[in-house]
Length: 201
Image (cartoon, rainbow, N blue to C red; front, side):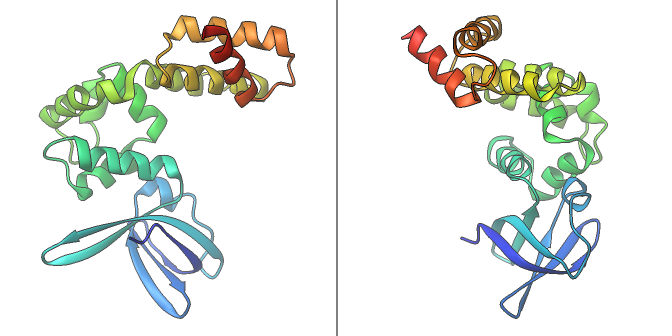
């Protein structure tokens, strides 16, 4: 399994890149979300990858962030009828935070506007991913929309972590606020989450 490529970016197109690693050029298909984050050709780059093996081809897909690769894997492994090409279209048409928010809020209209994703596919995405995205997706999308400060982002990250562990949104928010009041504003995300879990146990 090739999990990442780190080397010189030789060629960068909106849909694919070539990365030279140890004298070998690796071609990888990428979404637009990754293309916009690439350095200029000739510079060093680290590309997270996913290898898809089919009878007629071995295709490498590349991503600039773990979030993009995670969403790609979620789409091709969970949603029936969605292959790598459609998954790349989803990432090219909507960033991961907005996507999770659309799924959590059952926004079929927004999803169906992505190239290659019709209404039926959008409905299937919502049905099959809603439980995996959950309320945390809606909270994350809402927070991103309002542009949080660094301090508020820390609290938001702690809330998301607790929601991923099964806390309800309001319960997680209150617990984080209480933990911060106890530990002080300098407390990190891990400290806040640990304090909330300790109090809840």
